[in-house]
Amino acid sequence: MKIVSCFSSLDEIKPLAKAGADELYCAVPGLPSFGEPALLTGAGGLKAAVRAAHALGLKISLAVNSLGEASFTRPGEGRLLRRLAAADAAGVDAFIVASPAILGLLLALKRRRARLHLSSVQPCFSSLSAAFFLDLGISRIILPNQLAPYEARKIVELCRRRGAELEIFDHRFFGCAYINGRCHLHRPDYYTLNASVQNGSMCRLNISAGALQTPGAIDVDAAWKPRLGPIVRRLSSRLACGGAPRIANMAAFFEFFAAGVGYLKYGTRQDPGAVKVRKVREVRAMLDAAETVLGKYPRAEAQRRFMEKMQNWDGRKY
Amino acid sequence: MKTEQGIRLGSLSLSRLERTPRLRRLLDRFDWVYTGAEFCENLLETGMAADAARLQAKGKKVCLVTPLLSEKGIESLASIFAGLMKLHRDGRLDPARFEVTVNDFGALELAAREKLPFKLNLGRQLYYNAFLVTRDSIEVLNRRSLDFFALRGITRYELAPTGLLPRTNFGDKAFGFDPKAFSLTLYYPYLNLTTTRTCLVGMPYIPPEEAVRGIKCRRECRACAFKVAHPWIKEKLFIRGNTVFMEFPEKFYSSQKELAARRIDRLVYCPFP
Image (cartoon, rainbow over all chains, first blue to last red; front, top):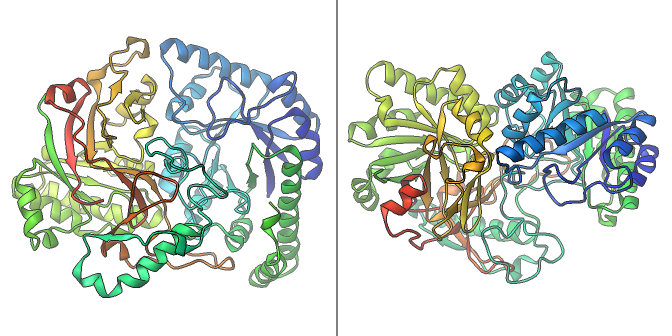
């Protein structure tokens, strides 16, 4: 399994490579990418970044995975196509794409060298969805965090058969129970904020369940009334303290690792450089731990030893 | 362009509907019945095919709305599609009065593989591939997205309004698309904000040492919906199962002409989130 790390400044490349990154990815101004800006800065821009990454033996992908910002007129389409062509000519190894329109533009690029990766912003939850995008020319699928390894087994099998690659996120540094690319909870697109977003975020209130008003039940089915109490308490607790259950966890990572998924991503572009390096070291350490036990013990024993080793990992320092 | 009226029943079964006088009365007022499971594959049932035929026999047009799909959901939907195809072959389901809304590219792929003879629509969890909806506007992103979906037989897109009559860019020739090439369905008054696979209401806690094999569902979402006060948000939120909604009960238009100018020719009332 290889590590794919985000970066947002040229001077982050070398330290990230040293920390253990095998591939890098970034976003640049002028090409629509998903999420918080944290676009590439530094003299020379993308060309310099590609040169620096390739000199260290690292591949580099470019995120062009916005959906809502993939808005363009006919003239704008021409400009976008030229910018994509320039990025391809600069030597990026892959484009990370979500929008069918941007995918169409990339497929229209003559003599395109870069490969095409499907972003988790266009989440793929089944082998049929995977097949749909593989048929369009996608060569790597970045799986959403809300898919269990067992559920992904047909996707893994399909990708193996078709020579496509798979990537997952390091759950410790990314992930939300709400489905990426379909969520309007994180931005006030439709609601009105009446307080600043405090520590945590819209989906992780991090307040005590008692500080939240009890959810009011509407249109209750009479047959369910006797069972409503525990449901209300569970909902209150989840809304206050961390949200819906998370499928992506340490055990899920190990199962994806053992299944042969090729790439593990760390992707918080807005982290300061030093934090990025520390996190990539953590990703490397976890991978090393998994590789060590799987190389030494039968599968079930390897997983048990891996879980034992990782159980004291403390995420609060991040 | 006449505005058709629909009612969304969600995964409420026809037999349960027939036991509910309020909903039975509501049904009489609508041209279309939207059934199925829009947000959760665990609510898909094979019987939805037969329900569609029975609703058509009662004179209704029917749209089966389908959710995001893992392999489990693909299997369930494949079974429903098989049922629909049989009903169609037996002459009991009129394709001119039946549509399927997809919210997953796997569903689109399945429909193509099965050569489904029914009109397909793009649902509320995929419309963002072609449209940008803000508080006061609905805009086509670009002509390529519309062409992409038109090539796959999709020219109807499903959205939710935000209580304001939206501005559009449908007359802007710089985008190069034909506004007559698509139609819009608006669901009201609930707008879906976000969805999880692991149900907020149900699904037991997952310990870090457990790699689940799938979503354990006890269909506790059937108990009720919930109204929730988020401490940072002015408006109330509504939660049903795995999806969080906002409510926009205000009537946002005053005439069919206003809707027609915005390519909106179908409104779907949701009696509950």
